[in-house]
Length: 332
Image (cartoon, rainbow, N blue to C red; front, side, top):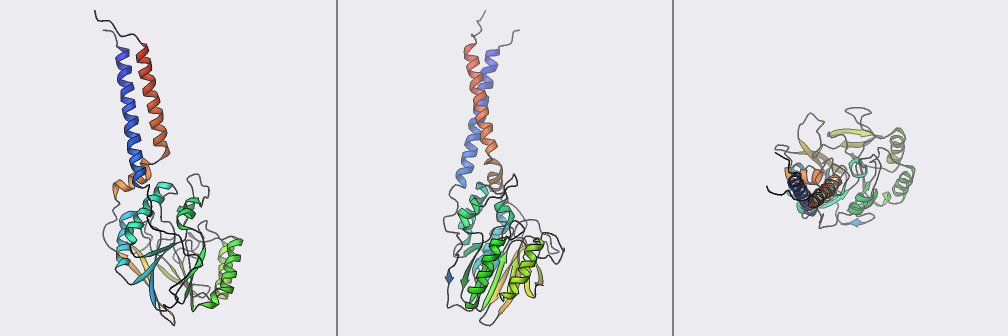
């Protein structure tokens, strides 16, 4: 019995074209799912003076979600039902620095924040590409400047960019000027950043370099900073840095490195006289991830899927062309 190569090539060609079309369609759907991104502005209010008459308020600080939707959804729901006026986000909102993750998490924020305002500084996940190179373009496009100040009521908030585990000289010059010229206008001053200068639970682990730590230890007390908040270590810790009350935040989605196996955040209560209280809050429930959104935002949108679809389509068309050239086998 002779092999019918023409029939085999036709089946192979049609099969490959079908695979190409299916993979392209799924990838297109995944991209379109997160195409819109956030329908609200998440740009930091750099240099803005918000609610100048409000001297008694509460805000929340969150860090290290890693694009896990279920924990941050529960956290934001809990914050929405509290008295918090806004959310500070201390970095590592996405899992990977790619457009799909940014679009996914910002669309989630747009849906879940509702009345809450959201002011972020970058973490290492927002600025580090897969090849190890640093790129702020996606972060800046969505959240604005990497470091900035704003005020709310009687309190000055200073967000620092420590996403590279260091702070450069230019940013320190800006910080020094801000503490010198803007700080005296306000009763309280809170500095928030991603990488902490120290890690009380594990000294030297996931902290700033020596130069950055020493400069902060010099500048923050001179500027009469009242509170320092940081993320990155995924563990709520209360300590002091250069004589300043200092807290690291629990994880809100990434791996927990704490004796308390829960995701969480902190509430900070301020009155006219003092920063009254910094209190950790935790959310309960399992640590599930919404499977489709996780899969679609990481796997299906990869450029390699597009390349695979193009090559598969080309191979399928080639097989059909060869089959068309071959003469049909005559029936005996």
